[in-house]
Length: 264
Length: 145
Image (cartoon, rainbow over all chains, first blue to last red; front, side, top):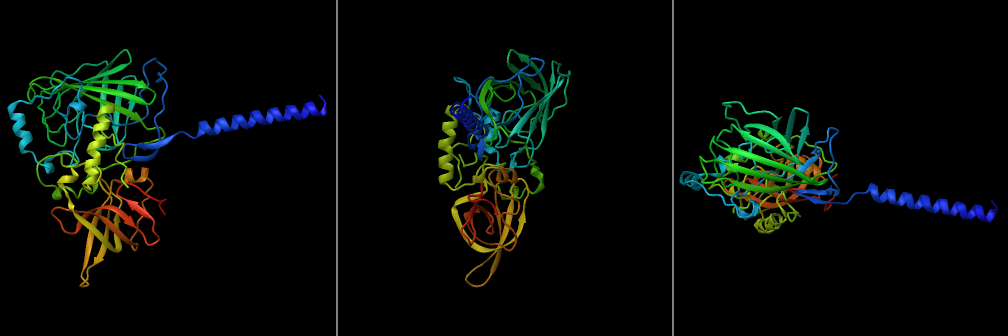
């Protein structure tokens, strides 16, 4: 190789290296923006969702949102098209008289299913159990028994007894055995121990998950209804601690009828 | 200040995100703090604006809300120790705050709104330091010190 050829070769290699390092820099700097309440977050990626080694869809990651409208579950915009929330008369009376300070969420008690919160959450998948870990409202967890059956007469609890199975790429979670204590929203939509929920989680792409929840409570509602939500992946986010009971100074200061965050 | 335009804490489909953006705009226009574990409208009166200056006496880096306390002297020389509320530490940390972003002894000015039923309790919207840097209910406007 003569001197000129060598210079050309060196130039070509240098150019290729520069281009490669520029591409790597672009790849190393993911786009950022506001996600929920959080600024300068890595935005959710697109692309196909992955699978675990055993072939089941991978739901891992920190997710934000996906719950029903926490302001008012009857808002048609948070319901499957054509669905309506029709309360029985006693439930309507309850909503009219509930006070903000009675909201279990304001008392640092669980928000139940499917009420949303502004904090991230995570699903942990094992062969026998799935766990949903909540950062906040409240800092707690749900357990889902995979391919299992409900007990005959489960004790009523805040999160009920959940069993799960896969239907193609959708995780279906069936829950019974709820107590009647949590509210569906800030407005105080109630439920009874007859509540039965069916959640359908589908990771539609790498960065998003659609969540539909059918709520069937013949004790409080004239017919079942289905809420819709869409969770967003928060890449690079880890759950933080949120012990609501630590310093809840707000409760004595809440007054007036149950209502949404902005008074609606 | 508060970026409410993309709040999707219930994580809805796109049309619901839009509905929330509108609701959020109304809510911010009212000056109410961002949602937490309770209704802001049940606790604070958006018509009772506060504009305080004083010395920070205590900081509580706690849940469900961080709080700081500050001594505020009125024109007669009487001192009131105000209790001012912020978002929760996990929200603040993700938005650039640090646990020592505000400390006892700091001289600050605070705007916000007052609790409906307690005269010395408020929600801090903007905290301004003598060097001009600001912190808000949700975020550090400038890098936290």
